[in-house]
Image (cartoon, rainbow, N blue to C red; front, side, top):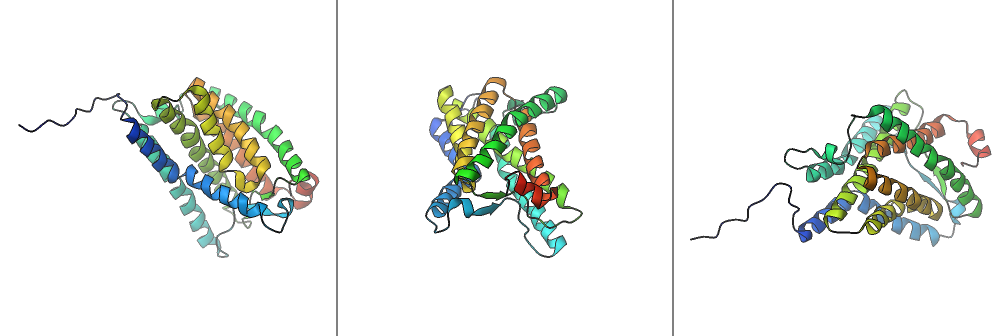
Length: 264
């Protein structure tokens, strides 16, 4: 008589080896890959003959001199970047419970989520702006060109979509998914928060050492908030607001004013 296959019981965590492999795969397709490239990038920047303060990076570059082709590339880039988010949500789903409900990516509390998200954006954004200016002054931060798209009718909508994309990728994966999976693996709270924060800091190192450290601090706040509240929606709101202000503001504010504020 052949042995029966092991029965899969809904709600029971899978084996740790399988979960570890799953986490590496998800990160390898998303933020972990970005972190590796950022580490190589910062090493290249630090060893280049040009000082870090005189280097620059563009966050939303134009992809073609032809407007409609550029728009197509922008939308494709945004769409494909969200595939790992869909994968993470798929893997977190359980019978009778959607992953969006599990990590609080729902619109059930719009007023509260908007208020908390706005508060978090202010808490992170105002000191972050000061730290960026300080980093530029001491030479540990590159010039971050938040938007270098040409001015078309679709520029601002695409920048807003890009901001939302960044928020979904980072908060669903670095906060929601990673915290959930590390807890499934038996990690302690301090280790979970540290891992999420260090990942967030690592994939921002292409902007320089200053932004990397600032994003570690942001990662601690966001991961701890998620660990306590189990809601990513306020984090998505906060992150979207931060990026919309940075991207759209950079695209619309005159270069002379940006220079006055120390943002170029």
